[in-house]
Image 1 (cartoon, rainbow, N blue to C red):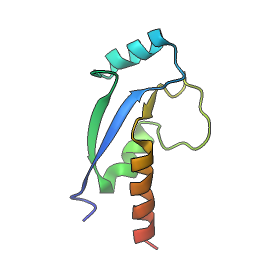
Image 2 (image 1 turned 120 degrees about the vertical axis):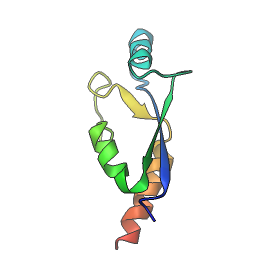
Image 3 (image 1 turned 180 degrees about the vertical axis):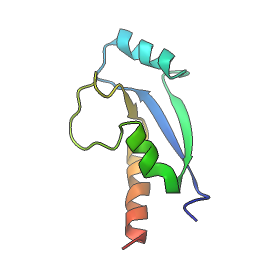
Length: 87
């Protein structure tokens, strides 16, 4: 069922960026009110996060990773649930 289950990724500018750089990111990603929602399927979630550069663990400089997940805890819970389903 993972193929049919939609997941919303809420992207926002990295909070470590200056206000002017956050504004540029908002324009680049066509954000409204500082965020944009990207919908994907659960089955593709890992690959989408990799493609966006959001699958990295640890600290990454804001200039290197200009977007972040606003709903990171929700997405992490989904990924953990998927991992458990394959155990």
